[in-house]
Amino acid sequence: MNCIPNDSNHLKAFACEVRTELIMGTTVTSENITGNTFPSIRRVWFITGASSGIGRELVGQALNAGESVVAVARNTTRLGDFDSTGRLLAINADVRDEAAVRQAVEEAVERFGQIDVVANNAGYGVFGAVEEVGDPQARAIFDTNVFGVLNVLRATLPVLRRQRSGHILQGSSIFGQTAVPGLGMLAATKYAVEGLSDALALEVAPLGIHVTLVQPGPTATAFGGNIDTVQTTQTDYDATVRTPQSEAPVSEAGKVAEGIRAAVAGVNPPRRLALGTVSADAMRHALTARLADLDGWADISKKVDA
Ligand SMILES: NC(=O)c1ccc[n+]([C@@H]2O[C@H](COP(=O)([O-])OP(=O)(O)OC[C@H]3O[C@@H](n4cnc5c(N)ncnc54)[C@H](OP(=O)(O)O)[C@@H]3O)[C@@H](O)[C@H]2O)c1
Image 1 (cartoon, rainbow, N blue to C red):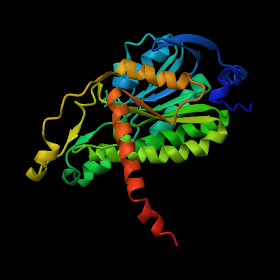
Image 2: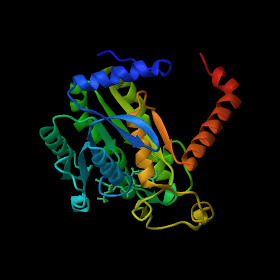
Image 3: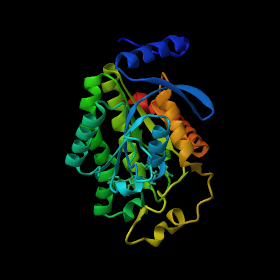
């Protein structure tokens, strides 16, 4: 079905989306997300990093909404408290293990027949100046935050392409567009995810697949406690990296998950979704600074044309 949603024709676009979903044999229902009523489809979610924080909230909210969830975690015992009534498939897998991820996707399709939303959420951080992060630590964070994301994409995209539908939620961050001292390596992985996702979005749009980069700001989860720290430090970086940071407002993981669900429920989902005022403000600041450089150096930019 050829649906071309646009803002000026919202209702028609929504009707088109619902019709598509009905034709695909899924059930239309409705629910309340962040105080608004959004149309919701009984989707099948494939969520990594499902054992805690934002991922775990997504699992709970999807199940509460009557949707089905494939919850991927390194330790699924932490998902044992969900009353799933058969709609939860918890799978032990490390996103760094491509074979395990492929196996998880096979089990997901075997159980539910389809995957509608892929939440590429698993990730962690490293704290230390860029120079202080050793090669093994730098490679390790890319293994999870970037190559893990790629493992999930390569395993799920054949399913989504076959369906000619789906929504990929790429786990980015406030640090996907801006960076602060001490978190350069985390930002490097999230910038990488942003770059590949911009290309991916254009590649899969004609196939009926949406891509949204999820950019939470500081959120109250286990993330801070799971941050890896550098082995050796240089005092030269103490002033920039190891100074007490001002206390920033912190988002709730449940509300972040609600924001993500709102993007999935929307007819015209965003390419990027900043979650939390801190994240939105940081994005605006970063983009404004980039524009200032672009405009301020426009003469030089043009002078190098052949
Ligand atoms: N919290 C924040 O302030 C914040 C801000 C911006 C973006 N984010 C992003 O949001 C996402 C979720 O983070 P969170 O805040 O919910 O933190 P969290 O509570 O620490 O959850 C991270 C999840 O990722 C999983 N994970 C880590 N490495 C994995 C691997 N190799 N294979 C499979 N699972 C792995 C963890 O599983 P285990 O339990 O097995 O370790 C955990 O379930 C991350 O991508 C993070 O970068 C968080």
